[in-house]
Amino acid sequence: MTIILRLFAWSLAAAVAFATLGPAERRPHLNLGQNGEHALAFVLLGLAFGLAYTRNRLHTAAFVIAFTGLIEILQFLAPGRHARMQDFVVDALAASLGLAIAGALDWTIRRTQFAAIGARTKSPRGTTTREDLTSE
Image 1 (tube, rainbow, N blue to C red):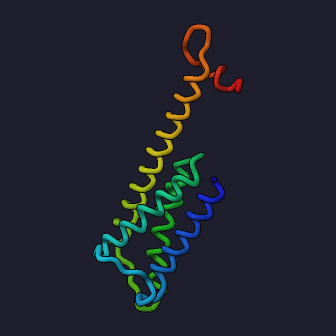
Image 2 (image 1 turned 30 degrees about the vertical axis):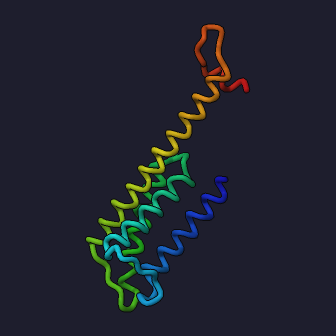
Image 3 (image 1 turned 45 degrees about the horizontal axis):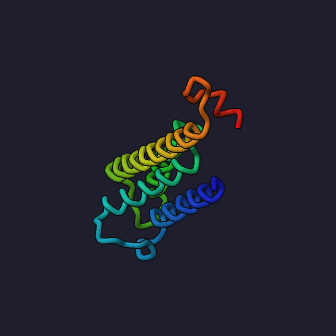
């Protein structure tokens, strides 16, 4: 499952990079306005990377925020495109929201799994211990 999530995250990053740096007539347009489109793309990007890379959330967050900045800076080199600080702020905040949602989902899933394991494994005292969980 992790490989699929990582492939999806990197594919989404490539799609966002193409939509941001490619010709304007080639990118998808929604009726959300420019900031809405940016926010949707980067919430999904943050969510995808947040679910795909759960071991070190700080590194994942730093990468996603740096990626948003890099894409914005690369727009200086793309003909007909322009980099704006407002776009970077929207993109970075949206990516952070996606990362936070991924963290909350991961926490909920892990807590549910822990509770399910704990219901099956009880120590003589009637409580679940770490040793009970690692002995399975």
